[in-house]
Image 1 (cartoon, rainbow, N blue to C red):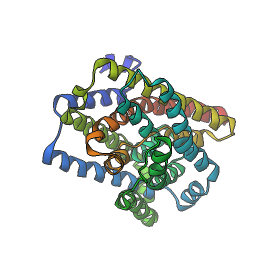
Image 2: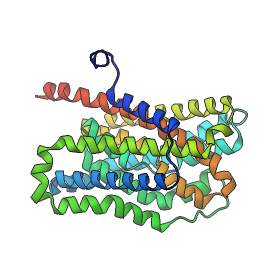
Image 3: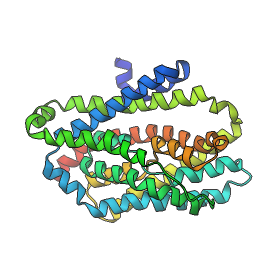
Image 4: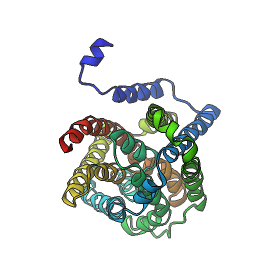
Length: 329
């Protein structure tokens, strides 16, 4: 432990790596995976309940009415990402199979993640109410915008049917626990704020559970065996380049537009994410079954990369918070 403490390695990153190794060695599938999926959903619901119980209604209203922040995040999710995807597509012919190149475009038109965006915003000390509103709005709007963007950006003839039950799931799993926490805020809010370490455990725990389940599904499906090493390398480079561009643009734009540090964190973590949870069911609706595996593979890789990179970035923001607070005082 003393040696680990001296090394410049983030502990949460080590936990993420250990989770990936566990999923590779002992992937969960079948009924056990279904049960673990329900536990993951419960952990996410608990996370939103605790956020609702901790935040005052005034703070939540301020987050909802922060329209400039929400416009920036939505522009990153549904405009910046597709434009960058099209630029990458100009260089993809000859480097990637057509199905994987289309998969990168599909990744770019998806909504933002919800649980990890909010968890990382919380870890970094950012504007959690705004992140909750922005990430939830992204997923709800994504039910309509993603099929439309698929037909435009990917030049398909499909009018893009979508699942209204997915919208209901978002409202039930995320918004309902948060509103319940808001209802009980006067009764348990002080206790939750005094025991804020619980919230950190749930934040990190829900992310680790999502990572383990996602990697297990990839291992069980055998998607990695279908690719050559060169295809995998090009996809990783493309995903890393895409994420790096969006992170750099969101950081620069938020500072250029005069947002506060807390708002910058929400913009960075909500505007740079793409949702695997939304992407897989949407792919099932939008594409033929035989193409779904390769279509979602770039998304699966991007999902893992964004978790690792944003975990490090969130901890870096958190370490900088005391210094910035001291400087401002």
